[in-house]
Image (cartoon, rainbow, N blue to C red; front, side, top):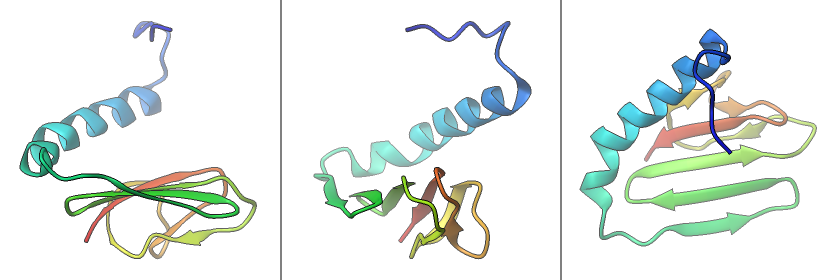
Length: 88
């Protein structure tokens, strides 16, 4: 699928821009690192280098357990059906 930028809303554009900036800043430093993936009953957590990505698929907030970088994080937790990105 393709994202039609002219149809995207401002929040989605900001999210994509932030993800691209994070990729450019951080992923080159951990290019040789393997990703560790942990699957929980209602979450998926990926760690690569010092980056942590947590997808909360459940109905209650889940602790990110990392310093927040991106996402709709509230007190270090990822909201239901949300994604958080942090640094260890």
